[in-house]
Image (cartoon, rainbow, N blue to C red):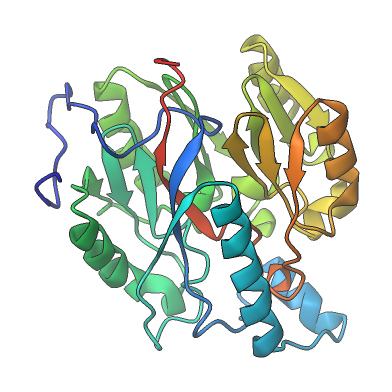
Length: 306
């Protein structure tokens, strides 16, 4: 067990990667995952997805959300993945989206700063959870906002981070970039419209050198950047973005978790030889987040050492 600290990061870089926790890609075999609790979840109209659900007259049913959340946890466990739950706090209705309050790196998690007022307290239970697990915190964002849905350990040596100026601000992005670049990694920034919540509704890594991207909703420059890294793109139609259809989790060993409603991407994944695990989370996604939003990987196998 590592000694818990709020700042494991070395100011001038050279921070040692953690041995028992951490990740160097979005697609290495997932061993441990942190999941947000469903206990106090309710839809809040602070994002485009939730406002759309309200406009369409959809009704939230907490009992259905609880059942779907439990089925998703079972899907992880059946895939051989250890699940860890963030402690529930009845003042925090969006804790279920456990991706956002921290981001995992090879050197430990970064505790982020949330944009929405009803999410700003999420740093407290996340710090308590890391302390209980004995995972040292790399550092804590103090400049502006940064949320985990905008942050991806794309592949070894490369972070992709979106920023809309809201959920992730230029100031939060720049603070994180300075830290990571001192460790010798590249940080690719991508600015986008805040309508899209986070970049993980537009982009997802499915496996090594394979990504799902809504080509119509991103700038050509980002597509060219992916191609320059020899990453194959599966194009996702824009209507599926509104249903959180790109919000998926690579489990490693050519397996991917995605929402049951996303049959289009499921077919394309199978055509690429991937095994699809597809829990029904249709009562959760209208709140503004899918399976990727609900999880924070704690430990993935290093793809550099495999």
